[in-house]
Length: 134
Image 1 (cartoon, rainbow, N blue to C red):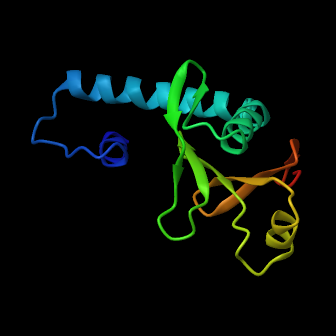
Image 2 (image 1 turned 120 degrees about the horizontal axis):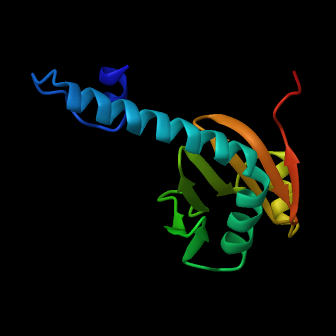
């Protein structure tokens, strides 16, 4: 688990197998995982906050007392926020899809993604959870 976490946060493990390092990494990993649970619980709230900032023309968005930049993709120039493994990105109106067509017609559409998975959509300020019920 220590090796996995160090790789996850982009650090290499030195030839140091001290208990201090293991305890520190274990604590950090548990803290990160508890934050992940919190983020999932308030996904709708965070998505609406990101939506308001992206479509409100802001350069930054404040979420849970942290400020995140709103940036644009290099190629398509759509605006997005990245936070804690989640990406909040506006619909590209230049694509060939029903969602792009709606965006061209003036609808404001934002997607919540984790990696390549679509988790939720915010359309004209209304949140839709795309995760399947189990």
